[in-house]
Image 1 (cartoon, rainbow, N blue to C red):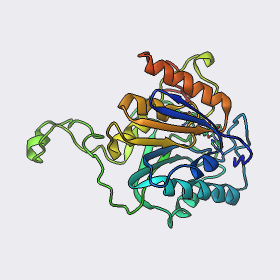
Image 2: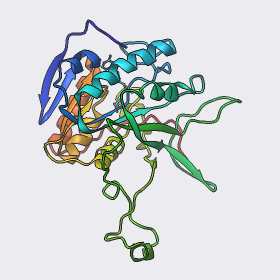
Image 3: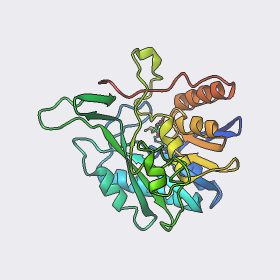
Length: 286
Ligand SMILES: C[S@@+](CC[C@H](N)C(=O)[O-])C[C@H]1O[C@@H](n2cnc3c(N)ncnc32)[C@H](O)[C@@H]1O
């Protein structure tokens, strides 16, 4: 994962910077306290078939590498910034997200732990999509973690902006709310778009839906001069979210082909088109 010899290449698309390069090396050259929000999904080290590297380091090597990444994130993040780390374990590495997060205790405070639910069954009905696990020992993995990390644990989050309307409208007056909005809590059901044909995918094995980074940015709060960083931007989903919310994005990825996809997606959204390339990791739906 740490590809030290990759020379960084930077380009601008709209108000956003896309950088092909190694996350740690690129961040080392960034200004201290220059980023408002980091939202990222790093390689999970669970054997995903990426193009340019093996997603299967020894667990302690992976955690050591991620500590190096997070040390740079802590440095570039403003004192009142938020870092949203999206990660998941696997049946063979169930401890990994927890091992990693405990190793970050001296760098950050874990301010919120959000569970991103990709699929849920309520009574007999299933909502959303997931990648099925074929096993007699394990159940399907229908959720991932989003760790909300901050410097001091004291960031005022925008609970209502990121919230939902009341279902029972009598609660608005009864609970003395000024608006029809409540905190949505720490379980976020954000399904993937349905993709029926392989040609609709953009050949990246692990993307998140645009709504996920958008929800993170909304929870932290933003304005047009806010800077968001995704040091593992993949196909540029966080930058598409940044564009849709009107903030500046910086995206880094080591893989030229993914940077090209990110550029294409971003240009299409900038041109007023919709993000038709919204990816799905899901193989199975309701
Ligand atoms: C889980 S994917 C991110 C997917 C992204 N959230 C999306 O929606 O497309 C992780 C990405 O990290 C990139 N990556 C792996 N090692 C890297 C490194 N050392 N520096 C920068 N990017 C790296 C991979 O190329 C991959 O695209």
